[in-house]
Length: 409
Ligand code: SAM
Ligand code: TMP
Ligand code: ZN
Image (cartoon, rainbow, N blue to C red):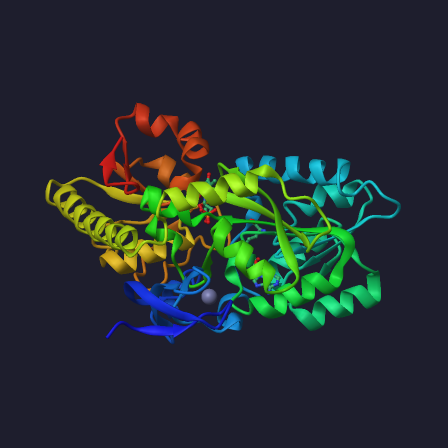
């Protein structure tokens, strides 16, 4: 019997297609002395709704376990992403936010990477961010932040206090939120008549195309396509009016929703829907092939790391990403195969990786004594990282990548 559950979008039947097994919280970096104490585990598995086609996790982790005072992800850690969000802020400022006294709300503003430019330009804004530590970093930059989980009641309260929003924005946040009905009712009630809800998240078609199975972890609850986003919008009086492919985080789509009938959909929407149809994205055979590719990557990566170790090479990891939790725990890779992981986030340094307890160290330790090989867990930032770590390559070091397959460069 296939394992099924109820769709968090349409209440249809979700059929499981891949099981990653028992996994820890992807962002739970513990102090070494507390490693393994009270670690939270759950079963990570993906399924697809046979009605609305939304790809989603089979089990939900309580939101307070993931997003809290100690949430370690810092959005401003990548110069490429700072530039990406800087450009978007400028686009908002010169398009959607040109009326009298415009207002923008951002869900999951994190350390303020997008809102900073708008705050500096004196535009009325509000970040809604439940993770206290990162919300404080945004506030310290002069950004107005409400420490809360965005949901219907919070949206209604924002409207009462600040009035309606011309733009509601969310980057790498909407896909984190299982209670989508509450979010979309809140959005529909908070937007002005012509307002837009813009969000960008990893694109399921790119995950399948690149075998980037490590995009699957506790925080990534939904994996969107134009088809599934259009279906979820329609359930709440919203309409998908634009889509834009983005070259960030291994391939994302920026979706624009408006109140139904308020805007004319761009031709890009029909084009992306047609491309998805063509790619047979939701065909069970496509999902089976994805699963087979993922198992092969696991076997190849473990074999490579064991071989390197047997030959006496030093291997470290680069980027203690949330994605790496899935790779390490699914493959059973621990400190025996990877000495440490280099990461720029002060919130992760000196701690150990969830479940596998590999030490996380600052990049200065990577630079001080280059290893022979580095597994690039932050492969989505490859260009930026390889450019700044040229000395590693020049000294004979090699990068190990595992998407779309295991290879050494
Ligand atoms: N927007 C930033 C970016 O793209 O780098 C941050 C993305 S981070 C992966 C996801 C953020 O969503 C976290 O800071 C988390 O605290 C926040 N978050 C989770 N649930 C939320 C909710 N219901 N409302 C607002 N923010 C939420
Ligand atoms: P992300 O893939 O979810 O954005 O996470 C990237 C992680 O990699 C984050 O912990 C910060 C780290 N990182 C580095 O260590 N060096 C870098 O140059 C970049 C861009 C990220
Ligand atoms: Zn559904």
